[in-house]
Length: 445
Image (cartoon, rainbow, N blue to C red):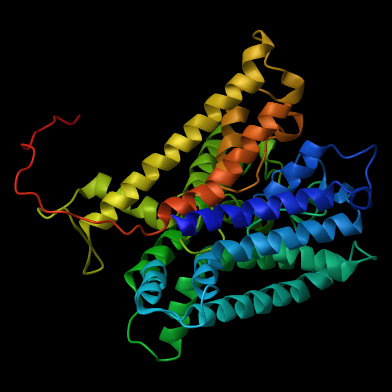
């Protein structure tokens, strides 16, 4: 319980602190005065590394952009290292009991010293983000003459943290044909979405410290590669003569790959989301719901959860309630946990959509506000994007009512912090009863 309270306090404090800094006149360079709700929305979106915006990020001053950048960085680092920070801070010596809690969260085969984990996470993050910055300098220099390094750094951090914030008003649409920009952003997003556990596991395998990689890493790689390829093929087919119509053959392939990568968690777009066909928008909903890998900066229910739910649905379990994958068994406890986790996620998502239909459509008297794009599908899309902390939008978010913005903020927080809290290991006590309730049977289907 204390860990969860500390987790919530960490993110809430960041959001409040960010709101205070963004509401200052020095942070805003746009027309008029920035509203408190918009400052709070931006702070929540940055800390939850989502990317949904009610005002353009480009309209903030350089100070405001720096604040947003730090909120993204601290929000992203907090996501992947919160548990170890909490366990390492209270005492200099980590008890065996606490060390086991870290090991339970990060898998038994990876580093279990909290301080070492934190150092490795920070070092890896800095190296990747600086590398991304250097790779973005040249292509960005063709159009940007002032503040080139900051713009490159901002997009590198935003991509690695899977935040989707951009200093360009149309995200990366102007760079749809820039190969180096697309590849760099995609690699940053994928690395950020794989997670520290997977990356450390691969590092140990490549350095010869261990003979085989974990089942977790195998599943993450299988699902990540499969989803990227399947998504790219899907978008290529359905957007060939629509959203990708103006691109050459290479540009269409690049746009399809970029769309497949960004939809699961990143939130950048090289084409306008509203221009996609209905089938593409539906597959985008699924990808946003799935998200990335556990222990990463990515959102969603995670690829491992989706894999377990999918394999149980298609193949069922054995007599002991287990499933065999790659010559290893996934326990009944893991299977039950994944299914429960997915059901809770669907419940949160449904509640968000339901609340938005009340705040945005109920008082419209049947007029769904075509100019603002307010209809059931755009509400569903925006809710999925907020819950998966993706940041893709059909243009509805800036036109939300005050209650609607609050609902989306809560959805982002639930999708980011709430899901992490639900995934944290719980210590449960089991008692043996001499007298118990009789076993009952329930028909299914």
